[in-house]
Image (tube, rainbow, N blue to C red; front, side, top):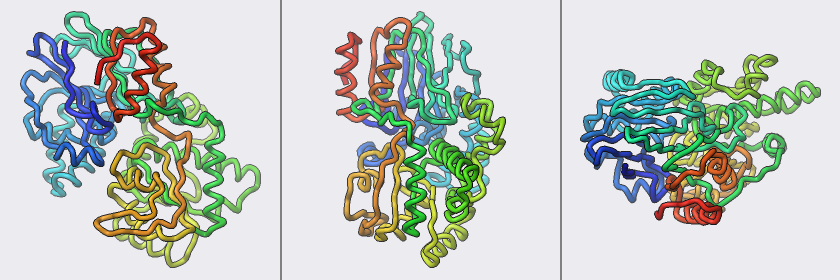
Amino acid sequence: MKLFHHGAHQGVTGSCHQLSWDDGRHSLLVDCGIFQGDEAQKHGGPEIEFPLDGIQSLLLTHVHIDHCGRLPHLMAAGFEQPIYCSPPSAKLLPLVMEDAIRIGFTRSERLIDRFLEAVDALVRPLDYHQWHRIEGDVEIRLRPAGHVLGSTIFEVRLPDGSLVVFSGDLGAGTNPLLNPPTSPPQADLLVLESTYGDRLHPRSGDRQAALESILRKTLQDHGVTIIPAFSLGRTQALLYEMNGIFERLQSEGGQSLLHRVDVLIDSPLASRFTALYDDLQDYWSEEAQHLMKTDDQPLVFENLVKIGDHNEHQDTLNYIARTELPAIVIAGSGMCTGGRVVNYLKRFLDDPRTDIVFCGYQASGTPGQVLQRGAHWLRLDGKKYHVAADVHQLSGYSAHADQADLIEFVDQFESAPKRIRLVHGDYQPKRTLAKKLTEKGYQVDDF
């Protein structure tokens, strides 16, 4: 058994791991994502630079672009093997792929449809919590990872009985729509993400209060609050929380906030994901399913506005700037590397009434990270923009486990993993987490 990495070993993005057995004659891939930020420049491009000989299948932990974005390139290189994932991931993957192809390949509807048909022919959704035999005499079992709807921890049992666990991206257990991850019983090798291996998320229970204070500040300033958010996962969690805020205010007679600030979802992709989330309620958390008994639309509220095509997007930008009405804007991309959020930043960055709210990880070299670090200037599309806006980090919405969560995940194995390989983390988080795990007696591979 050998494990090779084609991404997210010396960094956070571009997840792609190859597990081989039978002296390298057979192997499988776990994820095939694109590189982002500084890592995209370092690796040169999304092309597949490793041979496909002997690869039996692909295990897809979830459909975020840094875990699946190289699929078009993989298939263009000749990959025609099964892609195993959870049922929600199978439903969400076509939307992600369609968007990725439009950005990186072609806008030809005919070619996009052909590719999506080819992907559909390869995808094999598998139920959680059951062992499944796949190619190469391998068995796999899926567990919810709590990171995003459909995210999966894979247990892989090789023909010689060796058991390898891939954590994928683990959730922090705070997403109101998702159940928290649970640990498998054992592993000869645990491949563990380490994004936040050197820090702890605030454990306060008032994240909804923090979000509400931002809504009220927007009203007071008559400004614009911009929330760069991933179309899948973060957007739906924010909508769920906002719905709870507005429902509570309405029951308390606080109609003013409800009717004086609009919440704009300026992302057609996020709107389509949200609709699919509604169709996948069987995979929601117990809390969210309980809420469904009293609120059959927990992702929709009266003052929610969904922005459609590009013309409507431009009209909305101009209308907000002209009327100076308060607005909360949720738009992609989550790291401000492209998409409609960039147009909002260009228009409103230099206004001190503007608030920019980050509620997730910002990769090195991305505009999101530059803003997060308090820069006074930001370069977008080759032009410098003055930053007068207030920048906030909204705690409690991270989709990633923190150091304590990661250690607890390892501790909860019935038998301690024999080896741990840290991936999906920058050097310092990995080093810090490795030290903590080693102090507890775990064997951690060098990196």
